[in-house]
Each structure stands twice: as C-alpha cells, then as structure tokens.
Length: 466
Image (cartoon, rainbow, N blue to C red):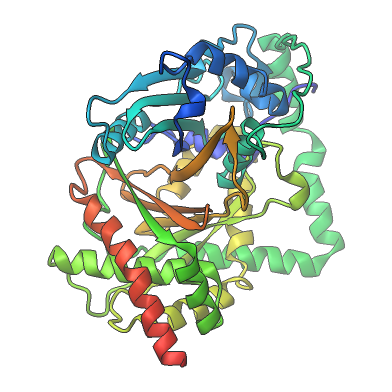
C-alpha cells in the first residue's frame, strides 16, 4: 500500500480517546516578543502562517489526516489532506491586561481541553499576544497518534531555527496532495493484510526457530500481566475525569539536578522521580492523606526511538515501566536510593517488552482490538504518569525570536487524573502538570512543592555523601 498505516501503538491512542479524555499532547512556549511584531507592534499572523507553511515539507505528516478503514477492519492510514488550510491550524489569540502567568495557565487549560478534529491534520498552534515581560506565547497541540514526546520535540526542531538569522532560506518544494484510496480498495487491502499468513505466522515461525526468544517473550508478557493484575491503592485524584483540564508549570535549575545526580551516582531521571515523590508526599500531607506505608505507582514512558528515527515525526516509539514512589519515606536520600534500585532492576525486568507485546497482540484481531486496548489502558496499575522528555541542548529561534522556555503538556485519563511531565531546555527543568479541573483544584501547590523539593533533595544528598 502506498500510504502509511498507523502502528499498533499509534492506533491505541485513537482507540482510548473519548470526549472526556482527548489524547493529544503539546506544550506552552515563550518567545522574545520584538522579532515577532511588525512596525505597529502587532503580531503579523498571516506572515507567521506563511513562515510555518514553508517549513511543513520537513514534516510531511503535518499535512496528512486520518482515513479510517470501513467497518473498522484494520488500522487507519495517513492520507494527504486535499483541503489543507494553514489558517485553521495556526491561530492567534490574546490575553487581557495584565497578561500574567495565572491568565496564561487558564488559557492553556481551556485550549488543551478541546479535542482535535479527526477530519483534519491532528495539530494546532496558537500564538498568544498580550503576555507580560515582553513575551509571546505559543500553545501547541498534537495528537498522540502523531508521535511521542521525542517526536514532538522533533516537531519544534523542524519549525524552528538553530540561529537567530539563518544564513539562507531553503527552497520550498511544491506540494501536491496525493489522492486517497477509494474506501472499497482500502477495505480490501486491509482485510488482505489482516489475514495474510505472514501476520501471525511470522511470529510463530520466529518463536519456533528461536525457542529461547519464545520463552523470553512469554515470560515478559507473563510478568506484565501479573503486574497489571495488582491495582494500586487509590489516591485522591484516581477518579473519573471530565473533559475540562487544569494545567500549571514549574521551573527547576538543571544544575541542581545534575549536582544531585553526581553526588548520588544515579541518573537524572532517578532525581526527577525522587523529587516528584517528595513533592507528592508534601502535597498529600497538606491534604490530610495518609502516607505511612503508602506507595504511589508512577507509569514512566520509556523511549524505544533509535537515533536514526529522530526528526521523522513518525509515530510512537514508546513503552512503559511502573515505578513505586515511596511517599511513606520521610528521608529524601533514602527515597532516591529506593527509586534508583528500582529503575536499575526494571531495565532488565522485561516489563517494557511485555507491555509492547500486549499492545501488538491486541492488534491482531480487528474485532476485539479496540475494546481490548481500552481495557488494557484502563487497567495499567498506576496512580499517575511521570514523564521526562529530553529537550534540545541549544537555543532555538522562530523568525529571529529566541525560544525562552517551553513547558510540556501531557494528557490525563479516567482514574489517573494527574500527569507530571518535564523537559530540559535553557539550563532548566521545565515542568508541566496536568489534572482534571474538578479533581485537583490547587494544582499550584504541587508545582511549588516540586520546585522546593529539588533544592531540599540536593542539600540532603550532598550532605549525606560528603
């Protein structure tokens, strides 16, 4: 087939999407304002649309929409949108005076609450005028079916420049949309692919030829099923969610985390998880939630994206591990040691491979793939998501305006109404915290606790290790 078909993982994000749990990710970024204004001090949105449209050839997926297979007989494909309209995808809004962070957080919550239109390419950019401190905001929304967190960083890298004034403008190739296949042709091809002998026989043949791999495959799936069968004790945010989101942000100097990592001999991700554990402990205590012997289970996405796949915006290359966050432990050094021991053990546990195998096995039978995927996604043994996304290590620019900060947005779902995401950029860890608007009303307390906990963790670790 000439058109790309979504992978099993990409399709899973479509299958679990419901009106109250849109499956898009995104970000809030701040840019220098002056280079993005015209002589009258306005943001020239038409010029920005032309600029961005001139970059879309770098990421062809941004001009493609979904085409569903008739009667659900197979995964959707990507087809060129012959009605592509850049003005729909790149928009301008403004904050009222004074344009402070509180107003921006409210705007991000409202924009991210609205699902993307599946009849169009699955992304939106919202430029935000009226931001204080002479900044311009940019809210990005991309459906999770388009790609994972690293893919969305790659999207930013494609639209932005590495220099304030690039040496020359690259030629923009002419774009002509390819015709979509007829529905009957797509149905026939999908059915043939589904029932092709190679679809299941390839796996069977591989396992028969390499029985050791078969044993490992079965063991990984078995461990994952056992793990999934042990639901965690619920936290206050483990309730059904509405379609309305609350979002906030936090900033932590990257050097603080690096000094902690060096002193403790662990990874930056261990430091992030330990600091989040301490912040969650403080948040729960402030709400009179019991913490003795309490463990929170965090679903931690793990990238499977090879370096050669960077910059492609080509679907999801992620799986997951579940890490126990010891909120019962009062000592920050011990919390970090417990988490580090877990993450080392989990790297060889087979849970990452087992979770991916379950997704792919669920996809083998079209009639049950969607309900089985929804069942599995709704029974991951977790209280929250904590995801650490490596950001660009160098400054980036949009039409000469430097990117100052970028904060991630990652969705929440029913019964898991809290996500903590972080990206590194400009010498900072930049956090985006998402919850349901009605589930956690004082989300800002948690973001403040995260900022405080990194400093306390560094002081304790440095003092402990001398």
